Amino acid sequence: MANSSTKKWWKNSIVYQIYPRSFCDSNGDGIGDIPGITSKLHYLKNLGVDILWLSPVYETPGYDNGYDISDYKKINPEFGTMEDMERLISRAKRLGIKIIMDLVINHTSDEHEWFKKAVAGDEKYKAYYYFSDGKDGKRPNNWSSFFGGKAWSKAENGQYYLHLFSKKQPDLNWHNPDVYKEVIDIMKFWLDKGIAGFRCDAINIIYKDSLKDGKRRLSLIGREHYLNTDGCHEILKRFNSDVWSKYKTFIVGEASLVTPDAAKLLSDESREELDTLFFFEHMEVDNRGIKWLKKKYRPSKLIRILDKWQNVLEVPTNYLENHDHIRSVNHYGNTQKYWEKSAKLLCGLNLTLRGIPFIYEGEEIGMTNGDFRGLRDIKDIESHNINQSMKKMLLLHSIRQRIILRTTRDNARTPVQWDDTENAGFTTGEPWIKINSNKSYINVKAEEEDNNSILNFYKQIIEFRKKSSALLDGSYRRIASPNDVFIYTRESSEERLYIYCNLTGNNKAVEFYGDKIVFGNYEENERKDIYLKPYEFRIVASNI
Ligand code: TEU
Ligand code: CA
Image (tube, rainbow, N blue to C red):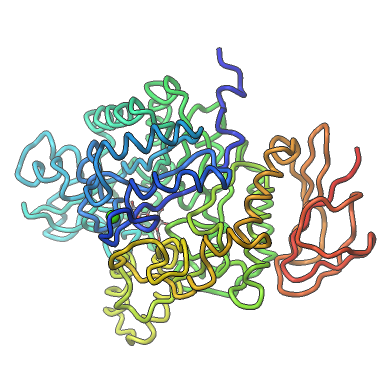
């Protein structure tokens, strides 16, 4: 029997998420690709990354940038070939970097063979999806989609089909054992190629208990029929015993709308389902019911949420950014005067909480939201759908534009800024989406040359973390502190660290714990009753 530490080989890893389309373009077509990723492996190694999570690289018509898969065993030709993928896996392996892939199994593309056969009338494949004649010619139920609008559309065969996301993404029917067999086979196909696990997309909504009407509410009508169902738990347990345990994988699930209780059921070790999961509550800290309506961001609320989740999960994931949300400096920091300070603070926070830190491409150089000129620069299917819904509500163009530009997922999907040249070193061609003009000072090259840069701060803190038993395996405890300052300890049998995070742009008076400052962009301070400067981050060690 493997003991817990070999079984959890991933427990002390740093994970870096790549959105391949926006990472690095090797052939000048303006689209990031797999050889582009391979060319940056040394950069990632240098940063201290242990695991790469690749957003989908499978064959796709690309309506949701690869989250609409048309063939799970082929590579999107825009990204390269299977040989390119195999080369990436083996080069990464040589550097000691593991790769996990995105597994999107709530739905396929409507251009997948299965769906095409289904629409053509093949009964076997019709049973892979949810088709229905509807009620008196109307939709089968009142469910709404995650991307706005209704969750049912009509296929060419005249029948309705279910899609919790866009109509280009029909939901798979997880009651069908054939669907299970197909997915097991896909997972083995990739694990046999040497990948180390999966990030399971939208995993807690895959199994629909019933297709009854949902309770009326502001968003996601129908959710009580598919969120964290017993059927979903059952599938995860079977994935685990049939595949994951045999390959010693690392499995992280994306679990939207998850509560602490539901999260424990999905990821506590004894349940043998997911290894860990992404919760969303901190991303929604400033939502007013739905993500398109915002209220003022309050750091104290963020602190409460993060503190709560630190105590929920056995191995939490920590993330402040991904391809679905705005950039963290825009969300929780400051993009003006305190851009650099606040990006470093967020780095410190993300890398010193208990659990596995996830860094999203570009976060390590403090990239900011896209500087789009208008809706014409926006590519995201979700934004386009929402725009249509708001049009139906007769909202003016200027209002729709303001709402969408502030929140669109494209904010995090602008190309990684490698240098300050015309296309930021991302491509020699025409980029698929607008590059941020702040590439002139926010870019990898400039930050590599500056010892004091955000990028070098990441490197230093990753190095610090790798040597610290308190950060790797220690306990977590919050300490009472003034509003909007997050102070916590991380403690192992060898060391006790006090972590100070001032989440505001003001000076804050705090009590001084511990003995000596061991990390931070501080200036020398008094020992007692010290002031934290705006967005200051520091680590203080105490002798134990
Ligand atoms: O997101 C699923 C999800 O739970 C959504 O709520 C997500 O937060 C969405 O972006 C709302 O704005 C996953 C992927 O991360 C996303 O990129 C895909 O578009 C989606 O699944 C469909 O596959
Ligand atoms: Ca390319």
